[in-house]
Image (cartoon, rainbow, N blue to C red; front, side, top):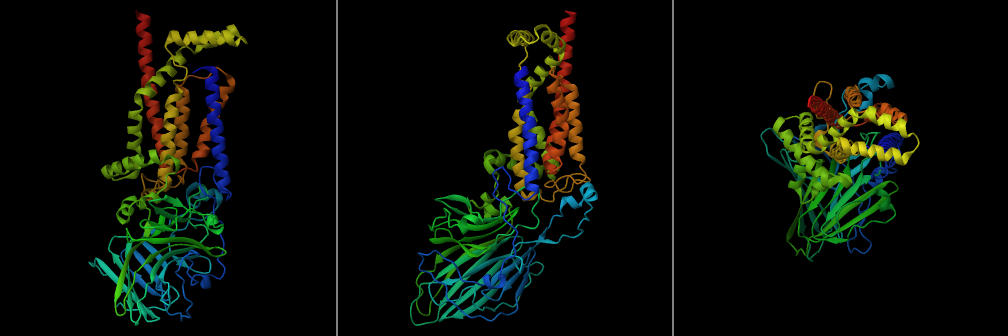
Amino acid sequence: MGRELQRAFLWMIFLLALFMLWDAWQVRNGNPSFFGTPEAVQEQVVENANTTAAGDVKVPADSKAVASEVNVTITQPVVVTTDLFKITFDANGASVARAELLKERQTPDWKTRGLPGLILGEEEQQDAGNVVLFDTSAQHVYKAETGLVAGNFPNHRTAFRLISDTLDMKEGQDTLNVSFAASQGNVELIKTYVFHRGHYGIDVKHEVRNKGNVAISPSVYMQLTRDDGKVASDSAFYNTFTGPAAYTEAEKFQKIDFDSIADNDTDLPSQSNEGWIAMLQHYFLTAWVPQQDINRELYTRQLDKHLYAIGSIVAVGEVAPGAEKVVDSTLYVGPQDQRRLEYIAPNLDLVVDYGWLTFLAKPIYWLLAFLQGLVGNWGWAIVLLTVLVKAILYPISAAGYKSMARMRDVAPRMKAIQEKYGNDKQALNQAMMELYRREKINPAGGCFPILLQIPVFLALYWVLLATVELRGASWLLWVNDLASPDPYLILPLLMVATMIIQMKISPRPTDPTQAKVMMIMPVVFGVMFFFFASGLVLYWLTNNVLSIWQQWYVNKQIEKERIKRTIS
């Protein structure tokens, strides 16, 4: 490549690497990442947690729905166990106060494992336990609450009674129904949670019975209440979104940070007849999905200093004396598995957010999942994906490698030209361009293989960061979590070795400054990749190995051409 273009490109790569290292250091120290991620929420102890968790329902100021004040008696929580859940219901409101996911294990912090653990002196946690989403304690409040508004009706502060006999899903049992009932103001509300084997979506039925002599028109509210504390398992080396989200046809998918709710500065539409609300955290979510094609009122509210809610209110309609009506909905509590989410509700899979490269990351995820289905291993799927990408880009990269190989051959002549013209840049550039034209060298050809890989690399970065299926997925031997950094640093060190080999078989820059930059690049990238997910390093390592083979092959072809020209 041309001297000035090569120098500019190398400095661009070097500065980009320094910037990414600086960004990783910023995130490591609790500061927000530059790459389009929201600010990290502060870890706070929720004040008066037990009081605010059972506080009033917060609805839009213009809503005619008003929650009533009721004194309740706290009774023993109800624990339900299925094949996927261990869920605790609060007797006040029959709210979901805790949800333990029995098939999802907490991931130990990689810094406590392997070499980082030895260096930092941190002991690896042997049993991190299961993932817990909903939880209620003095340190953390996260609940799913429902009830009736627009009158003196049962709500999430009302004492409910258990009316089901079975609380455990037996072997061979496909569904489990758990019902609670409460009466208030001549109105009885029966909540039924229907659990399905193998499904994280829980069907929730609200049955409203009018036992009075006057018609009523209540509404069912469904809300997710959460404090703004950080998720304990969040990595110190990247920032992911934690907070409310919603989807409506009018505004599409929206993530709503806690600060916007506190400032009453959200774009959430107040009315819709479809969509859903959710609370997101890395790899997992909870969501309320009311019946589609039914008008609902959406709201967000700050309930306390560090406590927030997002909710949906669905009108039941008029219920005549002695009559009853039912409102159906789905409560999803589980991983951000795109195939499961598509089944629950339209566009619920949008919670798997790939950032500004979604247009490229979505096809990469689809292809990666397809390859995993063929080979049964996510690591080998990444290797095959790299091979496919390399094959698609082969014609362009081959042309670039040919230019690099020819530049290696003419390096002595280039040096002679530089010595001849010295500081006469105009004459030097003319002589160099004439040499490139005569030898059929594209000065920018060597840049294309790297430039074409960058979008794929960034898109794969977001896929690995957001795809829950890769969480805890193993490849070979020591690589047992492709979504976490390599605890033994073997993959990054191998990648550094391949970069050094590439340098050896590539033309050496004639400019001493450029040569020095090229020498330190493997070290810079090696340190940077220490903090990247193993799957991402595996992709780049495989790409380097294929590039080395391709460049070796092209060098051999150029050598044969040179021998043929010499003989003839």
